[in-house]
View 1 (spheres, rainbow, N blue to C red):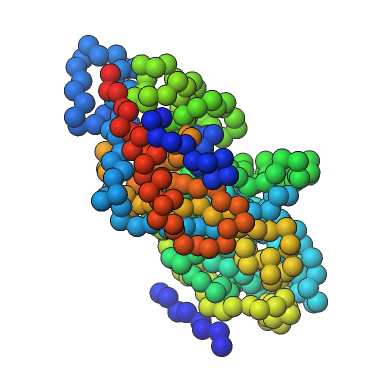
View 2 (view 1 turned 30 degrees about the vertical axis):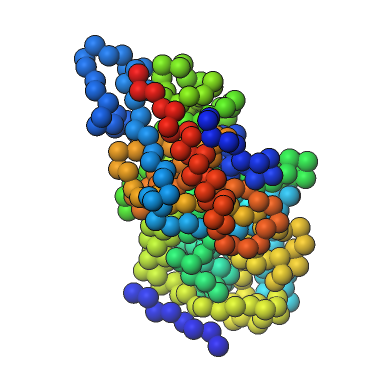
Amino acid sequence: MPIELDVTPSAPPFAADRLSRRGMLGVTAGGLLASGCATTSTRTTAARSACLPPVHASADRVIRTVAGLRPFRPAGFRVEREALGETALVHNYGHGGAGITLSWGTSRLATALGLPGHRGPVAVLGAGVVALTTARLVQEAGYPVTLYAEQLPPHTTSNIAGGQIHAYGHFDSDAVTSEWRAQLDAAYDYSVRRFQIMAGDEYGIHWLPTYVGGGSRGGPHMPDFRILDRSEHPFALDSVARYQTMYVETGRFLRTLSRDIQIAGGRFVVRRFAAAAEVAALPERLVFNCTGLGAGALFGDASLYPIRGQLAILLPQPEVRYAYNGAAGYMFPRADGIVVGGTYEKHVADPTPQPQDIADILTSMNGLFSGFRCS
């Protein structure tokens, strides 16, 4: 029975089939100097920029380990409308490793498919980031909304996400169409703009400089990208680039967005759907499917499969105000702890962190930061 809630480089790289989530890519403004890095008026800006506080990635600083399952489709996310009996069903799922990044954008595409001409209340399936952004856009268009989900925040896959605004690992290049790429561009542009106007402590969205280890090229949505001189960074790597992007504290963001939905009259109903016929029986005649991996069984999408990503959360280091991506893994600093990862394990459906994999992540991070040179 449904329950309605009334809530007022010395480190060894990862193996090729378990690459760091953002291993080939790479932001926080200001305050890059650690308290232990002496500066004088005669030092150059480049030298001061090279003085970054290292992350202490020892096992005794781990406060949590988690593993999330990314809902991956080779053909990329699915935003498509179809009829389910008398119900209009709009799909919005399959974002792979880009769920946070593309959430606002694909939700805008989905609502543009579903809302025109519709009258009456709207249902959203799911309570992860894509479901929440879809619900919020439905409300902004003036419709009442109910979200039906088996799990609510903080127990969703979105809560585990690292939160970097940079799309990664969400399609196979030989499986997508030019039409889908146009959707991707539109979704990316809108999402970035939407996150920009929400930046700040309330939603837990902040800009950080991101350092990228290894060969990398700039691209769209990578402001201020450039290859650094050796004097401009402390990493013991042959090639390092830096650019700016936003990071989302996923727990705070999901919690605050859920609050916004409730303040605007939205309802959350805890419910599991075993078959599409149960969705068709809902009183709402327009339903947005934002169930992520659940869409595979519920709506028969055989192309959808999980990619597991494991990470560890370390004790916070407020002085660390930069992020890192590279072959050694990734590091994203947040108020709730420093996130280090990760793995990219295709077709692995067990959401349990593996001790040896977590140990490998820490070893890799320690190798990266122990080689720091503060010029």
